Length: 469
Ligand code: SAH
Ligand code: SF4
Ligand code: F3S
Image (cartoon, rainbow, N blue to C red; front, side):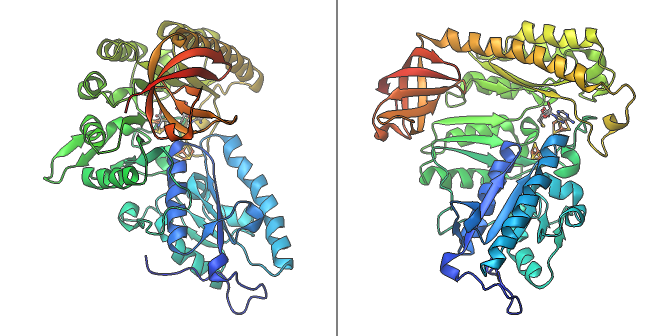
C-alpha cells in the first residue's frame, strides 16, 4: 500500500491539512466484525500518515462504518450524515477540506443510493473493498462520489497493511480477529449474506500470524470472529482444511495469549470437535453465544434456520456435559411474520428451559431484498413491542440469577483497563461479566484469580486473590 491520500485538489478553495496534522475519525455501528474492520481501517489511515482525531470536528477524514441489520440501525446513518454535512460546510468556511466516507453494510446494500440521499458523501465502500480506501479517497478528490460496493475477486486481507507506525487505536488487552467472512445460510430475515457476501475462511497461518503480532503488542485475549464462525474451514500450510476447533487450539498456543473466545456460532455447525475443545482447551473461555432465534419449530422452518428446538436443546446438553460451568447466550427475534401468541410462548418456554447467562432480543424488522419482508402475516408494532418487553424481562431475570450465583466463587479475571475510581481495575470473568476490583494498574493485562464479593446492576465486585499468570 504505497499510494498516499491526496486530500485536497489544487483547484479546491479549501486548503489541505499539512501532512503531519491530518486526522481521521472512524465511528462504527453494528457487530463486532465492524469493530474489527474499523481497527483495520484505522491501520490503513495510520499507514497513510493520519493521526487519530479526538473529536469529529478535527477530522480531515471521517468514516462511518455502518450496519444494515435492522431498519433503525440503517436509518440512523442518514441522520448522522445530515449532521456531518453541516460539519463539512462549517469546516469549509474555515478553509479546511473534509472527506466523508460511508463504509460497512449500508454501503454495500445501498451503494450509489447513499450519494443520491446525501450528496455530501465522497466515498461509499463496502466491507470487502475497504483495503482500497487510499485510492478511493484519492479518486474522490478529483471526482467526489466514488462507489466501491462490488465483491472484488481479490482478498482484502492479503492487501491490508500491517501497521508499522502502530495502530491508531491500540488494541488493548482483548482484541478481535476476523477469521471468517460472509454467510451462506440465508436465514429468511437476514441481510448479512447480501451485505457481506459468500462465506470465506482465512488461512490458518494468516490468522495465527495476526494473533502473534497482537500478542507482541500486549494483547492477551482474542475473540475469533465470523458471521458464522463455527463454519470456519481455513487451509493449513500443508493444504488441509482446519475447523474452528483446530484454529482455537492453534490460537491458544500463541505465546502471550491466555484466553480465546469465538463468536457468532450457528447451531447447525456446532461440531463434536468444537464441543470437545470446550472440555480440553484450558484457554477457551466457557462461554457460548449460540443464537436460536425462536422456540417454535414452525417459525424456525419459516426462518430457514435449518435446526429445530430439539436440536438446540441437544447441543446445549452436550456442551454442558463437556463443560458444566459454560455460560450460554443467544439471540431472539420476536414478531417474525405469522408468529402467534402460542409460538411466542414457545420462545419463552425455551428460554426458561435453557437458562441463559445473557441474551439479546430484537423486534423483527423487515429488510429489503429478504424473503421474510414479502411474507404474509406481518405483525403489528404494538404486539412486537409487548412481546419484546416480556422476553426482555425474562432474560434480565436470568442474567441477574446467573450473576448472583457467581457471588462467593473464585475464577480468573483478565484485567483490561483502569476503573472509574482511582485504584480500581476492570476486567472480564470467563463468562463475559464485567468485574471490577481494587488493585494497581500493573494488573492490567494480567489474568488474576478473583473472588466475587458483590453484585452491581451490570457488573460484579471482586477481590484479587492472586495473580494467576
Ligand atoms: N450470524 C449470526 C448473527 C447475525 S445478526 C447468527 O446467525 O446468529 C445478529 C442478530 O440480529 C441475529 O442473530 C438476529 O437475532 C438479529 N437479526 C438479524 N436480522 C434481523 C431482522 N431482520 N430483524 C430483527 N433482528 C434481526
Ligand atoms: Fe444472518 Fe442467518 Fe447468516 Fe446469521 S446464519 S448471518 S442470521 S443469514
Ligand atoms: Fe450489521 Fe453488517 Fe454486522 S449488517 S450486524 S454490521 S455484518
